[in-house]
Length: 328
Image (tube, rainbow, N blue to C red):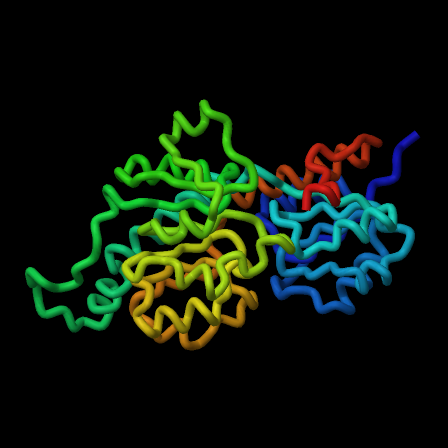
């Protein structure tokens, strides 16, 4: 007896190799363009598919899940973060949620280090002058940045990505400090030569660079709020390759404009694509369009994980990357 293939709806364009493999395995509906689904289109897809493959651009909240029919059984997210999915409500409705952890660790850590260097060494300012053709030649006092070696790096969130950032920063001679929900095992701390801070306030006030690498949860929303940002040294820099909601973007903007912080490097923003226009005006801020995980290898490996989760589910087993409400 031939088992009927699962119907799968993918909400965004994926790498060609991933789409090809999905077509071979499932009854899949792919996208012709790459615009995000509207809520109405998303609700329709959830009613007529066994499996939905969304991305971070799809806000699957309680109201949307209420419109899902009995057919939908798995939301196989393309990406590690699931703060855009109401996992609790999904499970209550009998819908499993899976994600793709661990795939983009190295890529995101690379971009974190790139932002630290870009801000502290004023790379975008130099690039802008060269592109404009206004460079007048070398000067002993032009484009003076700061040396990263010897600086204190405070990592907020010491999971896979935070630890990968620490390894890179150590190679540049930075001193590693971190704050985490749970302290790391002694052997990991020793390997990374990392100092644990139980108090985030105390760590923030003593660091030269803060790297935000924690997920967005109700407890981390505006974790770097106006009060905590003001604890940072005026010469300090903050970078964020995690989730924009962790930083109070308006407070950060005010401090940067007032010269109360030396700079910032942001790959994510509190309101998605709606970037605070005042941030764009600042020469000491590096803004990137959520590029932290944007490598061909990373996207392909993410797709492979999605396929494994769906295939395992189709075979009657628990997806290996199942997300439980307690994990969110």
